[in-house]
Amino acid sequence: MRIGELAERAGTTTRTLRYYESRGLLPARRGSNGYRTYDEDDLKLLRQIRTLQDFGFELEETRPFVECLRAGHPQGDACPASLAVYRRKLGELDALIDELRSVREQVGGQLARAERAMGELASEAAVPGGPEPVCELEGRTG
Image 1 (cartoon, rainbow, N blue to C red):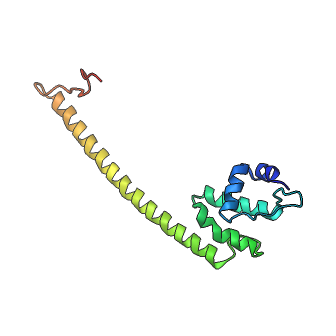
Image 2 (spheres, rainbow, N blue to C red):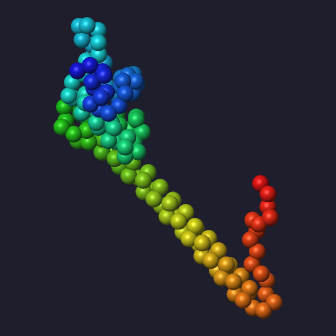
Image 3 (cartoon, rainbow, N blue to C red):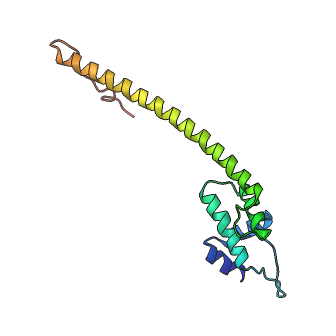
């Protein structure tokens, strides 16, 4: 198949395919007419790259999976180098999850503090002679 058909079937652009070719991820084969030619194996490579990128993998991180497919394995993650990339990615994701949990705890603490402060203001306002709640944004001009 030619580049336009491959791009359409893979759900990408010819420009992207040329970029992958320049990065060595997609083979650069030419027919006798000088046009790039591709086959179903190339479509499989592109689908593997796309899936991994959808999962947040950088383009270069897809290389071991592509090389595994090129080596004739039925799946791109059937090789030790691909498994190593999975392990690294899981480590990165675990670190991000830990960071997000920490941020969530901090935000939860800020919310609890703000709710306590708001409750204290409301109870003071209910006392005769207590302060009236004031919106700090009123009267300000942009």
